Image: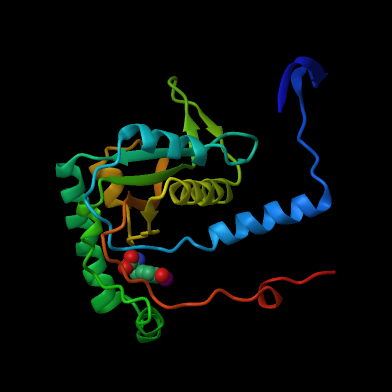
Length: 230
Ligand code: IYR
């Protein structure tokens, strides 16, 4: 909790008092386990229905993503939220063109074999069906109005964390998404008319799942395979 009443100056900058509830250890364990079990219910879903989602919901999701920590608190992200059918159609057309090339000539046989269990191909109907696309741009630096540049730091790490937090917020809202990374993805800069200091990072179609949805039957690695304790 942030208490505006209690302040401290560090390097001439004001810091405000911050406190958290301290849970007894069993309650900490229960909360951690519940959160894990709830996150474990999330699945990447490619069959997204065209049922509408309000702009208000999308705004809350973006705000959740923007709570991520970032290098020197530069918040080096822009979340472009697309509802316009014409723009979605343009994005689909350009993405499928790249994906067609990727699946038919750019991806290695080994890569295609690794993707076979997931069942993806160059067709990306979700880019038009989903009521919203959020295209997350990373801001490699800031461009001031007078033309001067200022630095951002740990941009990939910061934007990656923001995307993770956005994905968990989407799950919390009862919606589904998938992490689409068409490659190359610079067509998004053009279609969305983004400035030169921004680069597309990740495309997330967001909506309700179709009435009947199938996802690959997969397991997550057990703890002993993902963690080392010292
Ligand atoms: N970007 C392509 C291919 C793709 C690659 C990986 I690695 C995946 O886990 C899934 C898809 C696509 O979006 O189809």
